[in-house]
Amino acid sequence: MANNVERARAIIASRREAAEKDAERKRLELETVSPELKEVNEKIKKSGIDAFRAVMLGNKGTEIIENLKNQSIALKAQRIEILKSFGLPEDTLEIHYTCPECEDTGEKGNYYCECFKSLVKQLQLENLCSCAPAKESTFANFSLDFYNGFIDETTGANARERMSQIYNYCKNWAEDFSKDSPSILMYGNTGLGKTHLSLAIANVVVEKGYNVIYSSAGNLFSKLEKEKFGKINFDESPEEQVLTVDLLILDDLGSEFSTQFTIATVYNIINTRILSGLPTIINTNLLYDEIGDKYNPRVYSRLIGDYQMLEFIGADIRQLKAD
Ligand SMILES: [Zn+2]
Image (tube, rainbow, N blue to C red; front, side, top):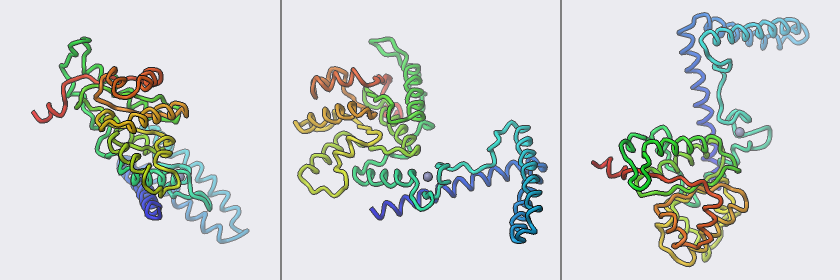
């Protein structure tokens, strides 16, 4: 726990540093292109220092401060005009923090900011499941080229077109994520990018400050089963966390060794999260009707009724990459 708080502090500090460096880099870049901008920036800086000195003068400084304030407003307006002439938004030179609420300090007054609490919780979850989403799978490095030229034999669907739709759907889904987002079932043969897109979604949603559990079905079920007999060391049991986390992503459902426990657990997870209105992403190599056979017909009807179905098609990418 203490360890997670320390890690969260370090992560937030590095976010802050990155945001500040980024703003600084942008400023220097623009100043080399526009000497006028550089001049205005220097004047704004100087008027800030002068104002600080005037404060030290006490009452005598009041008029000076008033003048400097007006001067600074005029200079900032001038700066906005310069930025506009470059077609840049007004806030280009401001620091863009991940959390504008606390400007990436993790604190608001004497309290922890929500972003900090959420980050600590996310780290706890990742320890719990050893299921941190792999950072290297992103939307940016998902290639649609692997789907070129593949036509699905049964439906005649074009893989590149289909996958481009699925890609856009997932990207928008992640960017617009809220606890009301619809659940998703990704199905289709192995090696078509289901895991990659699930991870890309997880990374975006975590970055937005939500808590995500990402786990292969096999790992998660064995964790949950052990916990039934083991000690509970957490405020919330792992089962509660799985049922209540903002987003649960269950990778490769159906690959786990099937037992009465796994069958009951799958139904419980899907059903409880639907009833609580929380989004879940499941990806599986099983076909539609195989899901009903392997689990429970009620699972199948729950999925059909409530999940957005995304059917992945194409040739096995891992195979293509190997060739
Ligand atoms: Zn914050």
